[in-house]
Length: 320
Image (cartoon, rainbow, N blue to C red; front, side):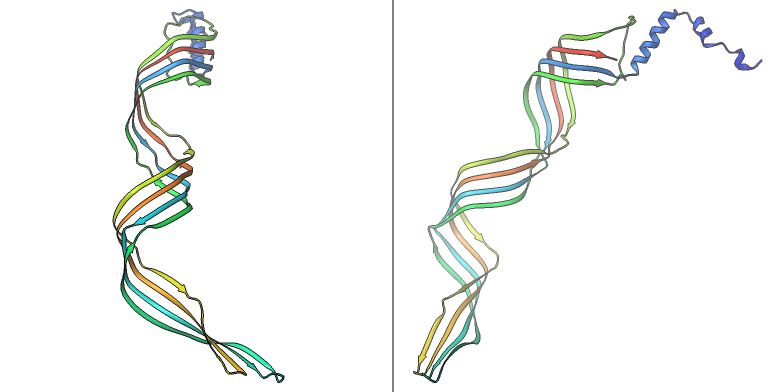
């Protein structure tokens, strides 16, 4: 006889167990239910409180500021002197000749010719400006686009007690893994609602909380900022160039039938090695400073709280 024919059937194994068939049937139903997810229609909490809330670190990342606008600002520079280092000038003289010939009924001719340019280099060395007093600067608007601000993390943040009211959670799906049922001896159970007077926990810990997207702030405005008069021992600039063109000057000679005009246009090209402003007194007023389109990534580490209490917990429509 084959070995499989000599093995007892499933029905014979069940009959040989010292358990009733009804108990084994209920045990099979419960085993099937624990492999499914627990679905809860809604959970509502009337009020809850978290005591001694502490956050070990809040990483703010780098804040991206779309635009910084400063409007209606003014500054005043007083009681200062300036020194221009290594000043070199190039004086360019542009010559142009205008002529006119008048022979009466014979004819009349006129024209102009460029005679070229004459460059005169001048070494001025250091130039001192002894008195820069009561210089008023008015700036209607200054726009600084695309700023990046490095934000330092906030550590050991103490938030005290949090109170939360009217909290609702809808359509919860809880995995059944880890769910233990002890002493359940009911064949079929239908729970439409469950009211819990209160719930409490001694501690609450969250290792890390990070939103998927950066925090978007619409903007901030600081109005009527005044910077009191401050002493600045020294302000030093790098090298810079400046050009200045003067009005043309003319010299004319009239010989009757011949009129000649020589026109000279001077231009000064200035090269300064550095400008040093000493002993300055500076004060300023800013009408408004606007921060626009702020993007701020946030990551929270180490959230702990003590004595969590929830009152008026209501659970509706529990199904397996």
